[in-house]
Image (cartoon, rainbow, N blue to C red; front, side):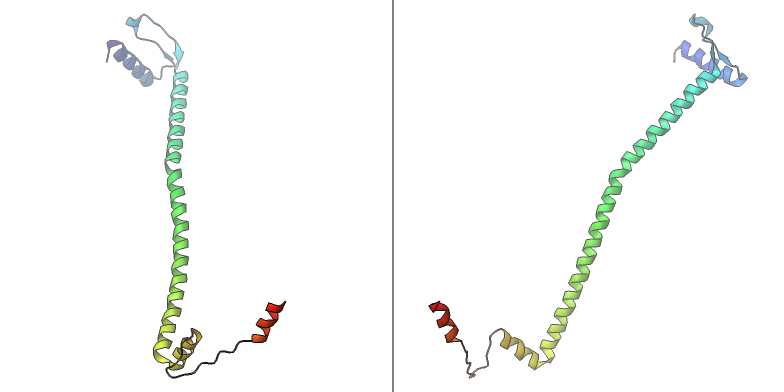
Length: 139
């Protein structure tokens, strides 16, 4: 620090300790300013308030993306839980159906016939309505 800044610091310290209402530049500087101390207090308070506002804005800007990311992950979590419950219900139905296949022979036979299977040495008669096909062709 230069001699000027040391004298300036000492002078400000002296004014603060004695509650002097005016502030004078160091004598050796050749500059004499007579400002009331309330002026400097006001400037310091405004600067402090500005710093607080800027810090608040910085904190808000830092956390807004994190809050948005949290909301997105919360929505995805809800979607995944809904899908999990749907899949769990489907799995339960499939397990019940598997249990019926293992325990109920009539269910197995009915399901096999629905997909077109027949027993060995069984004769299958398929009826078709020939008259309706002939009428459609003539029209």
